Amino acid sequence: MADRSTRRLMLVILSAVFAFLYIPISVLVALSFNEGGLPTAWTGFSTKWYGELIANKDIMGAALNTLIVALASTLIATVLGSLLAVGVEIRRRKGRFLETVIFAPMIIPDIVLAIALLSFFSMLDVTLGLNTIIVSHVVFNLAFVCAVVRARLKTFDWTIVEASTDLGASTITTLRRVVLPVLMPAVIAGALLAFTLSVDEFIIAFFTAGAGRDSITLPMQIFAMIRFGVTPEINALATIVMTVSVVALALSQRLNSGKLAGQ
Image (cartoon, rainbow, N blue to C red):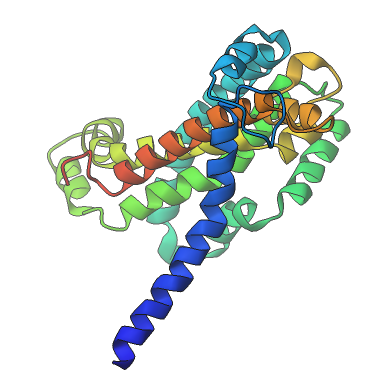
């Protein structure tokens, strides 16, 4: 009887938590299809606000900037993060200091990292723009990619690397034909996670973007629009950003678990 009561209590608590998390999101998605211009009063189903987004040059420009930043930073962070994960895993018995330094950006508050990057670019007299946002997102995403790839390396059989070397394969050949195929699901998962984080990231981009409109990303555009009030157009834009993020994150988790790799 006690076990049944405990299960019911846990079910109630779990339901309350999920309701707290997802009811606001569900309302946002529903109101993005609201025909009327009022953000809180339902007047009928319509997709016109998504059409308004496509016709809005500022939003399309911000979306293009976001795509450029996300793709470029993801590519660089994935390559560097994967190589870094291999190096850290090989050297893990020689000390933990390097590992601590690498994963520090994951726990440092975004505002602190943003100020540090802005100070760094100012010290070097670098003109702020998309290039500085890309570099900043690489710094931010690097640790996450490294963490995802390292999780796969925890179960990696290093004896196959030794066997490859004994058979005469070079280091590059071993990395390309032995190590990389095994790590590829984790590498792709890390890339998808980095892409998601880059698309959603606001604080670091806001501090390192500069003053020109040619470096505004979608989160920054949403922030600028929402200062004048929430509209169905903003709800539609937030829904699209959320959908892209959820899809990328779901693929990342599935790849990292090995389901798409046949593991």
